[in-house]
Amino acid sequence: MTNTPTPPSPMETLQKLRHSIDNIDAALVAILAERFRCTQAIGELKSLHKIPPADPKREAQQIARLRRLATEANLDPDFAEKFLNFIICEVIRYHKIIANSSESSSESS
Image (cartoon, rainbow, N blue to C red; front, top):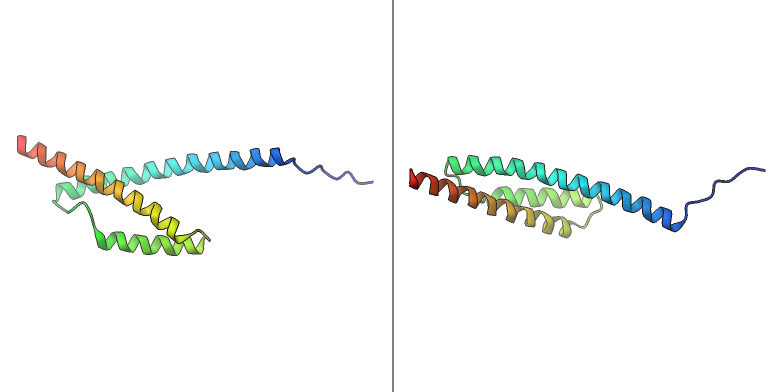
C-alpha cells in the first residue's frame, strides 16, 4: 500500500498564496522606489537644462509598450495603462517640484 500525501487544506493553501502576495508587494515597492530614483534624476537633469517636465511623445510610447506587455502577460491592458498613467502623473508632479525649487534657488542667488 502506497502512502499518498495529504493535500494541503484550503487554509494552508490560502496562507501560502497570501505569503506569495506579500513577497510580490514587497518587490513592487522596491521596484517602484528604484523607478522613482531614476525619474528623480531625470527631473533634475530636465530642470538643469530647462527641458519641460512632461514629454507627451515619450508617455504615449510608454503606454503603448506597457499595453503590449500587459496583453502578452495576460493582464488587462486598460488596468496596466491606468497604473502607468498614475505613475506618470506622480513623476511629472515631482519634476515640476524640482523645476520650481530650481527656479526659486536661481532667483534668490
